[in-house]
Amino acid sequence: MKILQRGACIKTNMIGSLALSLGILIMLPSLSATEAQSSKQTASGQTKHAIVDKGVDSLQQLSTSMELLSKRVSPSVVQIVTTGYSLDTDREHNNTNLFSRRSSSGSGIIIASDGWIVTNAHVVQGSRRIRVRLHQEDDLSALQSGRSRHALLEAKLVLADRDTDLAFLKVDATGLPTLELSDSSDLRQGQLVLAFGSPLGLDNSVSMGVVSSIAVQLDPESPTIYVQTDAAINPGSSGGPLVDTAGHVVGVNTLILTQSGGNEGIGLAIPSNVIRSVYNQVRNEGHVHHHGIGISARNITPALASGLGLSREDGVLIEDVIPQSPAQSSGLMSGDIILSLSEKPVQNIRQLALGLYSYAVGENAILEIQRGKQTISYEVPVVEKQDVQGRLADLVTREQNRIPQLGILALTLDERLLSVLPPLRNQFGVVVAAKESEGAYIGEGPLPGDVIYSVNGTPVGSVDSLRSVLDDLKLADALVLQVERVGSLHYVVLEIEK
Image (cartoon, rainbow, N blue to C red; front, side, top):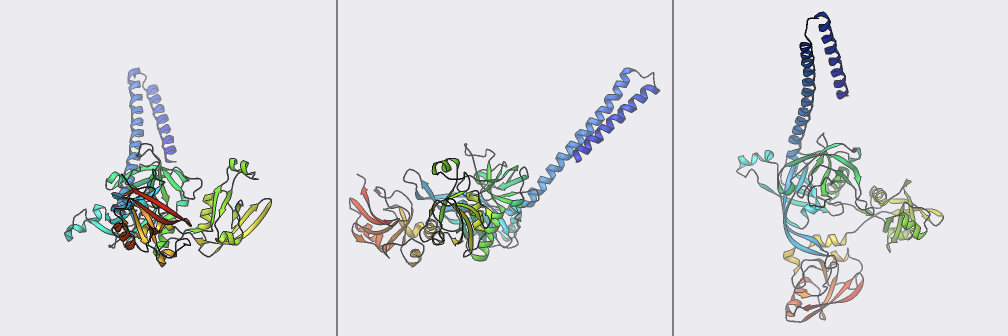
């Protein structure tokens, strides 16, 4: 509206100037053509200057607004420095997990004045020490106490949730400046946003862009969605806030799509509504619920519908029903097409997952399915999904659980592990939590999730006994491990490299 109003005002001024010039020509006939032209140019020049001045004022106002917004947001953005070990995927060796030492940095957001900070789980994954650097203007009190202005505060990892890629830290401090979480469902495409963080280790950086998309789904078979922005995001920006012009957090900067390794204008952030939900669960219950009913499902595509002779080309198809799950007990079957959840149509995996997420554990979800030509409704209890591999990795430390000969991190099978693992053949053994290296022997080696029962025929019932047996066999040319893998017993053969 202001631009249109300015345009109207400019036209009026030009018309008035022209009328004035004509009046002068009529009243003063002796005025030369050159002088008249000069008068016109002067009036036109004044108008152009007015346009330029108003344009400069608008740009200055925008610049000032961005400066004030940055100054208000920056104190609540921290740099996170981590050292420790993290799981890497070894794609050259059967996609197994490897532990490697790392030192890295990322970003975080202060969301509670008593020291609660949110960041990405991948920023702190495998960390044995986490430190937080506050924005320097908020660490001025450090000068009075004798601490360095850029002192790092020790942080405690409260919880890291791999499914949402969110982690929550706690520092021993109070009265910290915080940022408010917005309602990400109110986001609109084209909305102006700013990305804050520590890209490539550079402290306290900000970039500007727009919301490119309010809901990007990288994998059609995954329920995870992101806010897409063209604001510059680079390695080290992970965990920093994406904020709107009110200074409210609309997302946590998480990843970029790139061919060069740097920013190419496609940045993705976890929506603020997801952050709020996970944060409330962590603060109130100490953990995060991930709901499920015991099925494996996929989106229906035209090719899938054609091959299976399905009556529809969209929706969600149940691929598998897990034995002894609520889905099986309720009567769901492989091949069923999910039509709706609690009377709301389900057209894809994302809608199904988000719908189930709204239920509390123990509540019944009402599913309407199509089976052949029948339409049937089922009530299925919602349960909490188990992340066995993630739990095992969280329980180990390199110092206490390392078995260097096998290149693994291991745990003694006890009542705690028996409660989270599938039914096993024996009540003793050593559980492989993760692979750390290739080990001293060549061969396939044990995999994460395996349970080792014996080495060269000698039973092992604990990590200590496994170490002892391996020490006694240090001159052996070969090791034969009896392991249980996915319910079956196997012999794993390892040999000394000659």
